[in-house]
Each structure stands twice: as structure tokens, then as C-alpha cells.
Image (tube, rainbow, N blue to C red; front, side):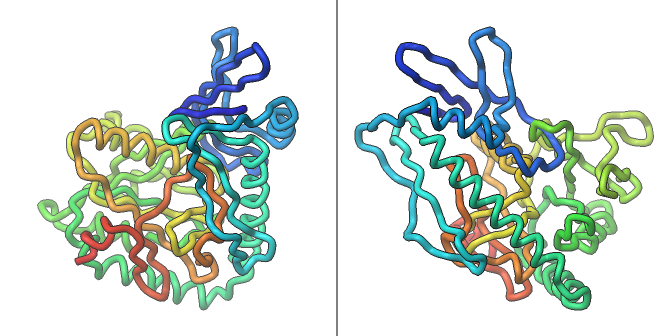
Length: 328
């Protein structure tokens, strides 16, 4: 069986035990999937980006044991607008999780299928409709009480190549505010291909440099050669995180692009806020209308972090009690 406890997975087969530990890294890899890290007998670490073949080998090599008093993450089989996409059950013990690798592989396969369908829908969007939805979504964000009241936030720099909801007006609004009223804004910089991503503070659009696929990211140092402030080393917490994604459902499940960058960043930041006894930031996703799915339509694993609210052209959809409090 494969059991996991936070970021550790252990494979048990007869009398042999192998422990797997996870590093982390950057660029979406469609044939790979994020999972906790692996530590092998020689003491070296290797990535838990398991590909198809590796996962299938694990499926063949392991047997899922019965766990006392398990609970199950599940929902009724609900089809989304893309046919044959359903939520898959994953059995997890209250104290130590147990995940069937074959069930995980089934979830990953459904995610791949849904990603393909959503990408096609985004590609076929009428440019005028896209522009109208971009404006509507940004208007909702800029006029919201939760945005206006935030003192510090993380936000993504939208990429036309990835067909993400535009954030240019949101970023411009923050950076153009008077000094005393200006919010701190941290934007993503991909560090490697193991899901490692930093959120670095910028004070101007000139702080951004073009990377692969014309994606803008902050330079690691400012014009004076000083390292930019990393949100993980900041002395104060962020109030808000504005997230991209490929699809979202009405329960807050988020389908990313398979790199695992945001899930890993959010996991690490949430752990930091608990350690420092800070308030958790509000997690808000921006979504075109074609990216919204019915509740339960997005396959999820225990490693996926849900959002608390979604902004779409239809308005601000509240999901969690935290979002309810922040939206007042």
C-alpha cells in the first residue's frame, strides 16, 4: 500500500520498505503529476512527479491494505460539461492517510482529460467575449471590499499565451496608488521544474522580465542589485492571494496546469501562517465563464488546495466562511 503523512509517502511490499520524499520545481509538465516527496534507500531524494509508467508500476507492485476506521473523500458521481469527468474516491485514515496508487492514477487521468477539454474551450473563446469577461472580472475585484481593505497580496501576472484571466488593471491599480496607501504586491517567479515557486515583491512593472512563452516574472534582484523581498521571509502576512487556474467548481476545487506550483506554495505559506499565528489569507480565483464547472466535477487528491471564492463574469461566488467574513 501507499500511505502518506503530510509530505511523506511510504511503500510497503512484503518485508521490504521504501520511503519516498519530495523536492519541488517550475514549467507545467502535462505527463507528470505532483505528489509528496520520495526518499530512497541510498539516501538520495528524487522527485515525486510520477509519470504514467511509474504510477502503473506502483499499482502493480502494491496492494492496498484495509485501514481501521477509514474516512473517504468522495462525492456522488457527477458529470461536468465535459463528458466522462467524475470525482474519484480516495480513502484516507484519520491519523495516517492511505492512498491507492491506482485510484490516484485514475484521478490524474481524469484531470488530464478535463485539462484538454478546458484548453480547447479557452482557445475557441471569441476575442470580444474574452475582453468583456476580463473587464467584468477585474471590475468586480477592484470594487470589492475585500480587495480595497487588503494591505498586502499575492497576485499572478496574466499570460495571454496561457489564456489566463487578465490581471493587468489589478496590478496597475496597486502599483499606481500613492505611497502611504499602496498595497504590497508579490508576484510569482518559477525557480525550477520541481514545483518550486517564489512570490517576490515588485514596486513597478519595470521590475518584470520576460521569460519563456512571453511570461513576465520579477527579476530576482532589483535595479540596485538587492534581493527582492520574498513573501516567505516577509515580516507581515498577506491578506489576499489571487489565483489562476484551468477550471474551478462550485465547491472550490481548482484544476491547475499540472505543475503543482500553487498547491506547493499555498501549502508552505499556510504552514508559515500557522507557525507565526497569522491570519490565513483569502484565496480568490479568477475564472472565465467556460472554466466554471458543476460541484464535484473536478477530480481532486488529498494534496489539492481549494479556493475560498471565485470571481467570474457572473459575480463573486462565496465558498468558505472565511470568504463570507472577508466579503462584508
